[in-house]
Amino acid sequence: MSAQQNTHFATLRFALLAVAAVTLAACTSGPSAGVPQEGALRTGTYPTFGVMPRGETKQLSFEEKDQIAGNLKSAKARQGAVGAAGSSRAEIEARKRQLQAETDATLKAIETGQ
Picture: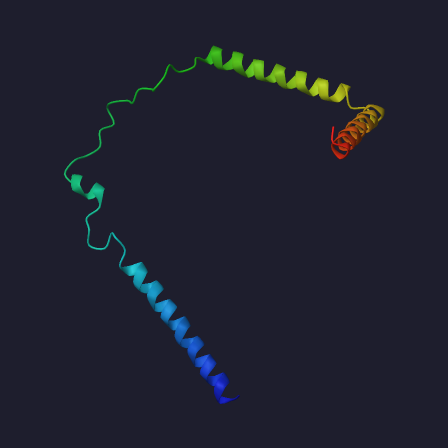
């Protein structure tokens, strides 16, 4: 190796060590080093489990839940039936030809300036 290559490797090693040192220093001196945490202020109290939390809004009953689930299932079945009925190979090809004709007409109108 030449002296110039050794200098480059030494510079590279120094840069990597400097980056590693800065990274490790940043990990140890974060904003929480030596500062008491928010939860540590209430060390003499215990949580109470006797008071049950209330719901923010009116909760759904089991009947309402079953009704909504039934509505969703029937809507899903209707969507599946529509998609399956209108997707024959000939209909798909006809729709592709129609879309291509519309695209060609639009392109022609743009090119002629209308």
